[in-house]
Image 1: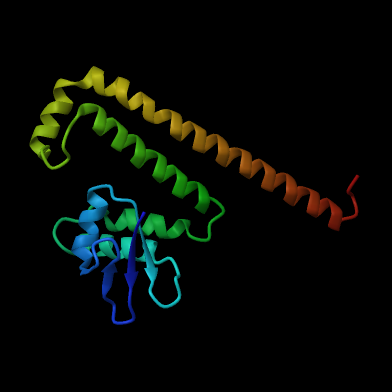
Image 2 (image 1 turned 90 degrees about the vertical axis):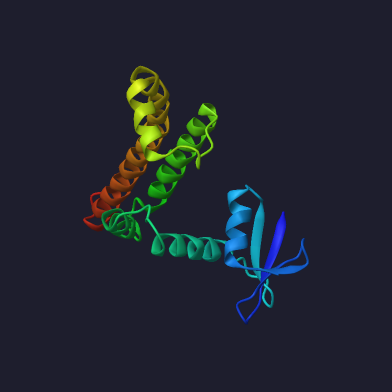
Length: 169
């Protein structure tokens, strides 16, 4: 596991390379699949998520954003919602399924232009249907978990209400 320390002056220090690195260099590590953690140099606190979010923010602000305002708004709406935990796993499962599917194609993500991708999708409709059918399983599993959690919460609330009314058996 590669450790990067973040100092109070906002500089990032790669302990493996024994050198200061930029956010762009940390992005390259992520793109290359390097396992890493970013820690506060003083407290040791794990700052990996905040650094990754900072990279996403920079990517979204420069060039062509991946997420529309509607998608970002919907993601924000899940914070504090009873389904917050499931939304994260739902997104994670689908992104992972897409990555697995892409690796099965043996495609370099930079090599596929939108035009080439559109042509490929048109030529491969039956194949794509079979590949994407595998995406339904993570969705079904997440939905089943969500339904189960909702049923448990409804049952718990009903028991509490009956207890308050003195009707608990």
